[in-house]
Length: 239
Image (cartoon, rainbow, N blue to C red; front, top):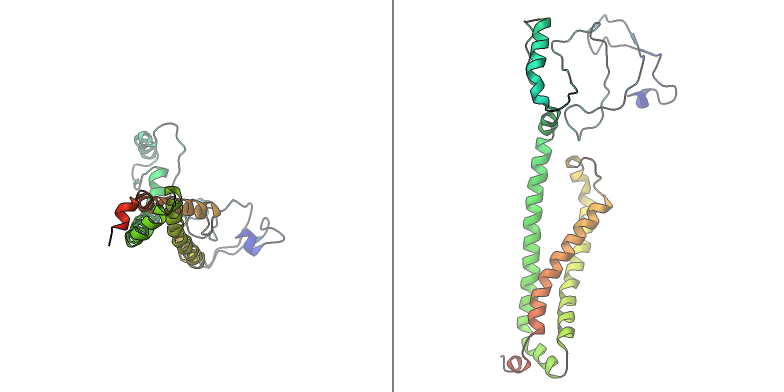
């Protein structure tokens, strides 16, 4: 708020009219200080225009107090209730929870969506790995005779393994380029689900690319290894 409305001079010392925000008739108040940006309910929400006013000048129907404790915060609930009752027995106390619980409640929807997306991502990764494995295995089965001829003419097992692996990795690289391009285009849709990391975070992209590469290598290695162990004589007799 200070950066938005007083970018050059700063807000301290200026008057602020709160009559429209609270109740008509309130006199303007003087700004005496500036605090850092604070998020209350939604950790992913944008910072709002928040104003702190003295409790004695502006009454509210309810108040929230935050206590810094040593040890287990839940063990302090009874002592807090006794302290409030000692001041006024008519004051009700409700919605008592630890800061961890409040943060968990405010981020429950985001965490649920993140877990849901992670499950779908794992399912998609499994389908992709299965598809790559099936495609390479089918290609090896179709080329059994060709591979046998190559090995009969002097091709080494390592050459067959490398050739089959390269065939699968070419498909993976093409799919990775297309997927990365689509992710860069659609990252705006994921912005609201992220906190503390940008939608184009290079470390995240690198980690995901590494995971996909490892999964693809494993998917290509099994049929490629099988191809490198083909018996040339049995392959030549294969129809």
